[in-house]
Amino acid sequence: MAGVGREPSTGRQIGGDGDRAVAEMVARARALIPRLRDRAVRTEELRGLPPETERDLHDAGLFRIVQPRRVGGSELDYVALVDCGEMLGRADASVAWNLANLASHHWMLAMFDRRAQDVVWDKDPDALIASSFIFPAGRAKKVDGGYQLRGSWPFSSGVASCEWNMLASVVSSDDEADGIGYRIFLVHRNDYRILDTWNAAGLRGTGSNDVEVRDAFVAEPLTIAVSDLAGGPTPGSAVNSNALYALPVFSLFPYVLSGVALGNAQACLDDYVDLTRHRASTYNRAKLGDLQSTQIKIAEASAKIDAARLIMRSSCIEAMAEARRGHIPDMAAKTRLRRDGAYSVNLCTEAVSLLFAASGARGLFTTGVLQRQFRDAHAINSHLAFNFDAAGTNYGRVALGLPSENLTL
Image 1 (cartoon, rainbow, N blue to C red):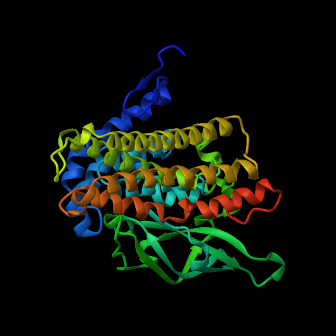
Image 2: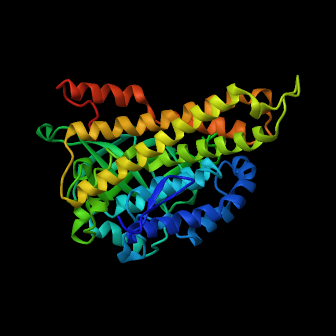
Image 3: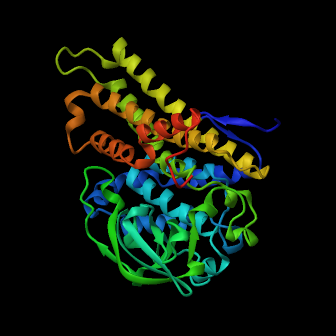
């Protein structure tokens, strides 16, 4: 293809208007790396994003990378979440986590009824939206004009910065024939309470606190059924026709945040190589870079990271191509997306763990970045979307002709 090249540091293909737009946003993210690294300790101490970091992300337009153009967003291809998450993850995984997570909710809001979009974006197109997609945490009941919602949801990342929250809930009905449903509710911050619960070993700066709704009415247009997010036209398609907004949301769920693990692992590798190039052994003063064991560990870690990047990006690019053709993936394809999303993040975690072990006692010092990269890697990997046992089991079930156990796919 004419005009196509490769960015050496990432292997990204560049060329074409869509690619150039993504590359521009990645460049903006890259420019923030020095200042975000400088603030990383403070971000952990605050257990949330410093105000100046939040402002930097807004000013760069990064929160709006997958928001519709009609309201001022960039409407970039889905792979932008991976690419921008990776670049910010090279600075601070907590910042990258909140950026990718909150940006993805603009993408999801574009699939809601237009009335929900207007409620948020007519007032403030920069408004941030948090989430907790743990369905059993909530209970909703159908009433005239909408739903009554209550529950207590954990892990609502970045919630302190947000005006709205997308909360997932089980829905019951007085009519037993209706059965149990799964729905997402767009709730204003006046209708929920933030509980200060986030004291964690990793991703400390994400402010992933609990939220509680005691009894809130949510109008029908401010809700969406999980079945409407399975791929293809959504309630928002009437005003947002881009294939971006016809992607299967929960099949692609891991790739919202997988780039964070990738960037964190790449930073760990880069830091390890830079340090090892000049470091001598404490005990015999041998240059560590001359040791074959060191060279092999660098090769193994870099292979895992490069493989993870290829898996993540190709999954997102293929999903966009399929959506542009109007094709909705079958269950086998959906479970493969979940499998590969989990597996690629596991590769990043393995790379960080390998490098941490190779660093010896020096990696233990809290004044260094390696211990934070190690903690963040394992915190990322603990997310259910990256649990390979769960994703692998469901993939295997479907491959064997058994029904999927993931009710959101």
